[in-house]
Image (cartoon, rainbow, N blue to C red):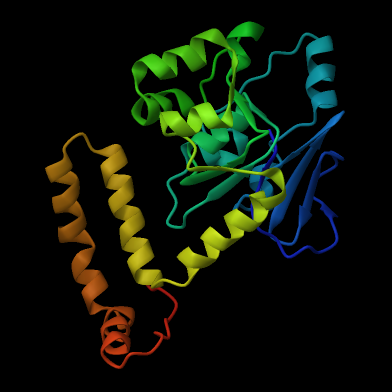
Length: 250
């Protein structure tokens, strides 16, 4: 997989003894032998220390050591329930663990050269980091079964039709598209975004639509209305000006 999000472009800094991990501003870069994998994560550096370079995995396998993956795995992204949205910008191969990571991202932008798949079944293992239940909900059981049981690779355009990928763009416009979308989101009320994210989580986690709607109204909407950004948004609309948002305290 090659997944990107947004950084400040600063000089790479080693995250661990592994030469495969670097950070560029807010961008974490995972480089592997003969290919480059990138994924930007709003996580602490310590979370990424669990990631290993391919040479490290090969060394363990050569010594007959079983690799165990705890439930959070993969920097915790497949099981993440965050208050801020994550946009994955995918270019190239997005397979196995990379696929499991992006399935739990909130928005996926892919280049027309991106390829997705879960080849675990071809290696005697299984995708257990959290993608399978989510994949069933997103694309349906039959399509999820085709992806997970075959181990085949699927082009971005097909997964866009199936509802997993939001947009497919040319590689040259991938990062620009993702950044533009992130910028559009960032212009909105921090409080409104926080409450909206909770509503999306409720819709994802709860079986009952009515239960999720009631939970959002009862637990979060009163807090939204009591915040300064609620009043600022209404006032700015009446005064026909851009709102000046404050940092969310929700």
